[in-house]
Each structure stands twice: as C-alpha cells, then as structure tokens.
Image: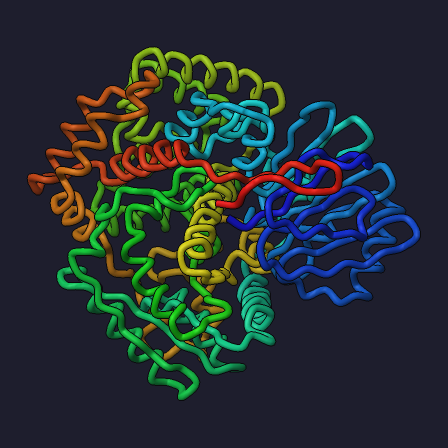
Length: 608
C-alpha cells in the first residue's frame, strides 16, 4: 500500500511509518510511503508539497501559495491538471487539499493529544488501536451514496474521513474542513472543447518522461480514447483481455481496429481461462483500505496487468472513471423537468421509454414524482425500506434519490432497525438545511466519489501485487471539472453513447468506435465464476464473519447463490459485495506492521 501521512505537532513522534521518506522541509512531519512523485516549494511563511502528478510549474506553486496564505483561499490548488495531494505547513498549521475525484482521500484522528492524518485509514487504525465500526460498514453496503449516514466516520472507530472535495485544516489543537467550492459554471455547449483540452493535457502529463508506457485497450470508447491520445506522443504497449465464452467479441474487434491505426501501438491480446474466472481465488493477500469489488475478478486483472509488468511498464493508463464523468443516470430526466425544460424532458422520457421497453406513461409518472421529491423525503422513504428490509419496485429504484441495495434486504433485523433509525435522524437533519435540488446531478457527484473509493483499492492491488503504477486520466482534476461542472443532461442522449466524449473527440477516434451505443457485458462470466467456484463460496458464506457479528442473515444469501449457480436470475452485485467483504474481513487477521517505534534515535519494528 502506498500512502502519505503526517503528525501535527512539532515534538518528535514516537512512531513513524515503516519505510517512510520524511519530507524535511515541513515544520511538522510529513511522510511519503512508496514512489510517489513530489515537489516542494518554500517561502518565509510556509512549505508546500505537491504529491502526485500535477501540471503546475514551480512559479505557479509559489504564486498560489502566497495568494492562499494571504486570502485563505485553497481551491486554487485543485485547478491544475493532474491528480495530486497538496500539503501546506506553517509553524503551527497544516492544510491538506485533495484532488476533485477523490483519488487522494484524507483521514484524521486525535491520539495521545496529537493529531495524525493519512491518505489511508487502515494504518491510522493500527497506530491508535481503533476497532472496526460495523455500523459504518453496513451503511456503506446498504446505501453507498448516502454519505450522511456515515458523516465523517470511517470504517474504524475514532478515525474520521474528510468529505469529498473538502480541505482539511489542523490549526493548533483544532481541526475543521472547508469546501473547495462547487463544480459549476459550464453550459452544455462549452463541455466538448473543454473536455478535449482537459483530457489531452491529462494524458500528456501522465506519459511525459516515462520510459515504458502501457494502456488498457478493451475496445470500449474510454480506453480507446486514452490509448490513442497517448500514442500521439509516445510509443506504448496496449493490452486487451479475452477468454472463452467471455462475450467480448465486439470489443476485441474494435480494439484491433484502434491498434492498427498507428505504428506507435504494440498490441497484445491476453487470453484467460478457468483460472481467471471471477471468484477463483478467495484469499485476499493485499491489505486494502476497504472491501474491494475488484477482488472478484482480480485473476482477470492480474493476467493482463502481468503482461504490462513484464514489458517493464513504468506507468499504465486506463479508461477507469470514464463512465462516471461522461455518463449520467435516469434521474437526469427529473433534472430537466425540475428546471422547467418540460418539452425536452417529455421528449427524452418518450425516447427512454422506447429504449427500456416500458410504458411511457409509467416512466413519465416516475420522472414527475422524482422531480417533485425532496432529498429529505427520499431519506425518510429509505428509512422505511431499511426497517422492513424491502426495496421499491424496479422503476422506482431507478428513478429516486436513493434506495437500499439488494444487500440491505439480507441484513439482520437488529441491524436494519439501527440503520433505519439513523436514516430517519439524517432525514430530519438534512431537512433543516436542504441544499440538494437536482437528483441527477446529486447522483453523478456521489457516484463519482463512490467509484473512486473502489478505484483506490484497485491501485493498491496492482502496485502491491505487480508493482504496476495505474493512472486514470478520466479522474484528472480538470477532466472532472470539465464534465461534472455542466448539468446532468449534458451527459445524456437516448440515441448516442457518451455524447460529450463523442463530440469532444470528433474526427479523432476511428470510424465506428465513436458511434458505439453499448459495450460488451461480463454478466455471463460472473455466473460462470459463481458456478465454477461454488464450493469455496459456499464455505465462505456458511462461516461468514458478517453473520458472526450479527450483521447478516445468511439464508437469503445462500438462496440467491443457489439461484445463480442453477442458471436463474440473481442479484450479482449483492453477491459480489458479500463475498468480497468477507474476503476483506478475513484479511484483517493478517495485518502488516505499518509503523515502527522510535527509541533513542533508532527504529524498531518489522516490515511485512
């Protein structure tokens, strides 16, 4: 695991992270674990370090630092291309500014009268002896987008998480957070040009100076765009994964077309087999900060990333995050109606009714209901469903602010009551200061934060397992700003797939790829993996840690697993969540030693 941490006190710490590099320019300890690029500038007042990839020059950093110190305005540090953490220390203060997508999360805790902070919660939990917060774990599983259910609580008691797109301030003995400002101000017609510039800069920043560049080339529009942008300025090695019965024949065809457009791409198709089916290996050996859904298919990921590692890749670019910044959900229809665009809302509703094969009047009623539902009211409805362990009908689940996951219906009655009471309390709190106006835009922003939290685990898995440096240009600061600053409906078109990217890259993508209206699905592979690995999964669930903690009723879980194994429809996402959470829970029994003691100028401890 690569992470960054700090100690907010000028007296020497009693423990330090094992293998850390100390950034000595700062008045209080700042430690970097792993080979993150970083740069530091100093003035008479403060030291500033950028950790990660950032387009700012030294002059940019100095000007921004002086301006920020004078005006106490910190959002300037999120306005450069890249994905990075900004650390500023003075004689008594520490200010930490994360990226916009959430690739650099922030956690903090007070222990032994000293504030500690980190980009990973798990090492802080070890340093302070914090125990797992099972209520927060359940809230993540039941309603992952409802951040208010968790507040600032992390998966570990006493370890707090900074809200997305907020800076962390440690001032003397106080701690507080401040918002970096809204991502607003772009109209729909401004997005394509802004996106093309931002995405081009994001890719160039990541390949500049790298000796060996590799990329995913799945055949989808996102990975193809990233690969071809990188190929403009460097030679690269692109990997496409396939396997018998995977069903990605169309993707593979488009990947080969894209690779053939330039001699800069060396293309390799990597073939998987039974050993790369989902759930083939249920042992989690890599310590991730939270349960990782990527573990269900880590055999597949490892196979194609191994090919990149063997060719000596120093950076591997992916299309990860493209779906989150380029697309929107059905709730954008309610956004249109809520902002008075009735004709467009009706036209798009009719088009989506034909696309989804549902009666237009039913869809129109659902859109109208959502457009006139306040967020607190939706939280109240969530509380009711959690208490009864039920879910709304499918159309009402799709067109809502929030609804419980299928996993929540498998919780124990005591846990369901606990979460329901919490949701009801949150609904009352939010009602007092309800600032949520558009459900589609809310879901897009919350969805990005949720996705990125999982993406961080993917980064840690790849680095620990294969020493591959994964980077996702779609999660770049300026790409996020270029897309999510515009209204939700700018990312939707019933006739075109990812319209903003298609317009932004017009004339750049090979014919046929930019016009794709869908992408191949891995659903069949998921069912095959459950069937192939049924005995091991059955054992995992029957001896579940979640059940021992009183969180889970395993009877409906086993029923869903049996349906999947017998070829019947089953909630694949919920099963994946239970299985991967169980894997993560068991990994906690084999915790690495993150910290070493400092005694008389020497360090004691071990590295695992």
